[in-house]
Amino acid sequence: MYQKILVPIDGSEISTQGLKEAIKLAKNQHSQIRLFHIANDCIVDSGYGDSYGGQVIECARENGQKVLSGAVTLARQHGLEAESVLVESTGGPAADLIVTEAKAWPADLIVMGTHGRRGLRRLAMGSDAESVVRDTQLPVLLVHGASRETTGESQALIPEDASNQYVYA
Image 1 (cartoon, helix red, strand yellow):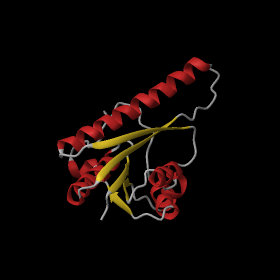
Image 2: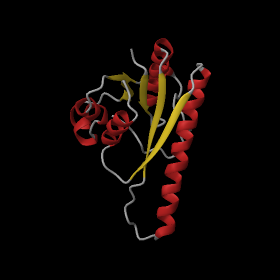
Image 3: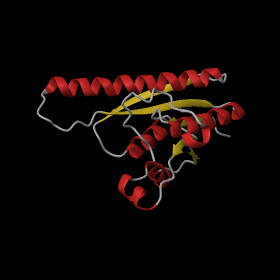
């Protein structure tokens, strides 16, 4: 039924939970899986010059590659070969890039983790997951991540000390 599954990931515990569900589904459906990460190059001019900006951009790329590498490894551990795509962005909603990638590939399903924020936190931080659901014609599976309090350990694909500012809803 679902031959191509797009999985936006950011390295967080929540996106890892989404990836794990996508892996289960891909194995069951004999589907292709594409891992999608957005490296955000949006830099506020702080007066430090081009060398500072270049370092931030390179750091975003390196972190993105680490996230994708960890996700590919997880998929392989479960017997799947996964494609990976790193897209650089200079800002704007991640949801737009996710929907664009889903159309371009073309995916049959999008699987992504969600924080499930409500109220003022959702209003302040926005919801990429909600925007993806609203802006695509594809089915979207939203997976709520397990919190560290319930699991007792980190499930993130990259070390907690790494700078990770790419968080989906």
